[in-house]
Amino acid sequence: MPGLLARWRTPISPQAYRRITFVALFALGAIIVTGASVRLTGSGMGCPTWPTCEEGSLVPRGATGIHGWIEFLNRLVTGAVSVAVALAVLGAHRRRPYRPDLTRWAWGLVAGVGAQALLGGVVVWLHVAPVAVAGHYLLSAVLMWNAVVLHDRAGRPEGEPRRAVPPELRTRSRAMVALAGLVLVTGTVVTGTGPHGGDEAADRLDLAVITAVRIHSAVVWTFLAVAVVTLVAVERRPGAREARGTGRVLLGLIVAQGSLGYLQHFTGVPEILVGGHVLGSVLVWVTALRLHLSLSVPEPAVAARPADAPGPAAPVAPVVP
Image 1 (cartoon, one colour):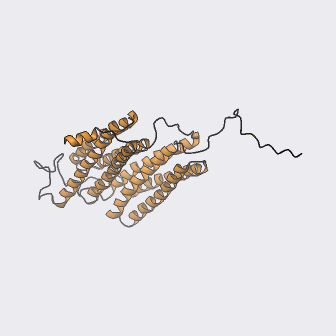
Image 2 (tube, one colour):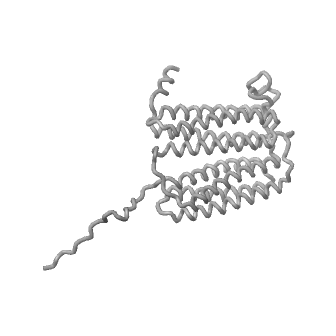
Image 3 (cartoon, rainbow, N blue to C red):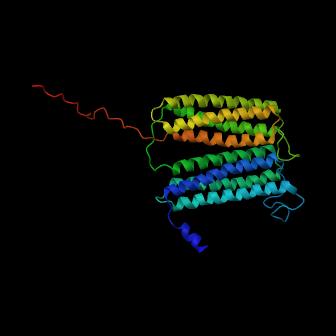
């Protein structure tokens, strides 16, 4: 233990810290997918108490069966997420040069994970009520936003000048991110009305499934339209190589995610497709955030010459005698 503590007193490089932030980002995305697997297997009440799995027992017993172990393993993944977030905070303090902004964003992850733990207890106490489950997922999306910003900032020098972005492009980008968030919200409404509630006795939202699906679909199509408009503007910007690449990936993910959504709807919402749709929602959300952040990041370009600065001397023609 003393050796481990001594190692954490050693300063770490910006490159090493960015790798730590990626691990935290990956872990926060993974817990969303494993949490969905709990719901899709009907194991939402596999551990009927919290923070223990059963009364007087941290681990499942024979009475809870396989569902208890599925839920218990998901709680173990939550522990791994907590470790990754703790490392992000410790690394922010040991990073050299020290960056206060990175420390603040890292502590934001700690606050979010703590809130998630408490909300997880509420989900159990409310017997996986749809509103509680939706809140659990949406809080995870907020945590992903925090982690994406932290990872992005960790890869860029402090005080780096930002490229001037036209107001109309900035507005489109913000609208795109807002619609991406609305897609997640309406997706939780579909989940709350659908068949995969996490437990056979779980309540469902008092809304027709087809109505929820239509609302969600309309928001997705609007999101796609705004993303296309934003990407067209990005493609026309000189030097925005990072944003162009991210935008193309986002467009492909939205099309794939939408196609998967229609496929699962017309095939009876099979669990495997729903799980893939949850993974897709994480990828789309992260990529939309990355595109938005990349629009204000400078890229190598030839600096513009001030109007009053002397230009290069014109070539002088040789004098012919």
